[in-house]
Length: 101
View (cartoon, rainbow, N blue to C red):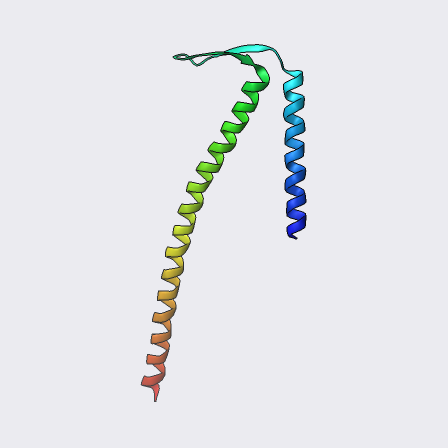
């Protein structure tokens, strides 16, 4: 299983490198980006496309990490509540058995 994961990771990396190279070769036009308050200097279209892709990937990883931390905290809290409820239920069951005799 580990070998398959490694091979898939390598294959994905190779595909991304090839796509990046093709993107760079086919998009050499110089463009400048105007962000209303900021004028970014000219660079190739491929550079801006790759930069925007990488920025989106990093942002999604960061925001996904925050969501994952929140979900894990919620899961821990819910698990504690479940254990507490199970302990209380067990106490009530044993109390009910003791009063019947």
